[in-house]
Length: 303
Image (cartoon, rainbow, N blue to C red):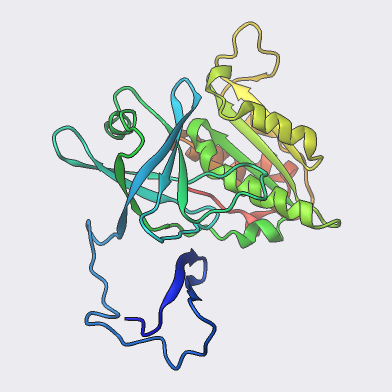
């Protein structure tokens, strides 16, 4: 318990730990923070050992015909910064009162440097007609609540700072983990004049209507000379003039430049897509030679 009054407090989860900020009500030197309460230092596991907080739905925004962005407000004075490349677990009850859990990677605007994380979390979710969690999320309205876990994952964002070239290969909603990677690299490029990192996105979808944030990706590619995006559609239709097909050795070979410096490749999508992509990139000798010797720099991003 605090012995001195405070005007406001802030709790922030950062990559290196927990940061607590207390703003004094009066200008004075504190002799101590206060006394420890019973149970200090103990943690009580909830929901199978994971730690959750109850969050309320602030807004629901449509991205396309089957994808929405849910903005969740954290409770009270809670603040949480989710490290780049990490995800959270969402838990909610279905109509039968059974708990349903799924993992999602929070998103942020691609290049808005003024947007800060903390009191809210944004989740871009593809909703399936027969999905257990989709049926719950699709019915959420402002003020409804869900349970949100602390961040988890082992992706090291420092890899983005030490790579000269970043290639992001995504399929469908596998694009969501890539958003914060794109943001981090582009914002870093804005801060430095030399040794900027090039970043290329290979985005696989069925149709044009399935492409998430088409306009935002296009705008970013026009604004940033170091960012490019290539859309590959399996059902492009008669009006589609871009690349057609599914992930394959030939498609990857056509769109992955023969870089000679350090590069980082991140892959995310359905299991079969991810496995095929990794196999083509790492085991096919033709792609391996033409891309470059990057085994030490290779990293797979799971979602």
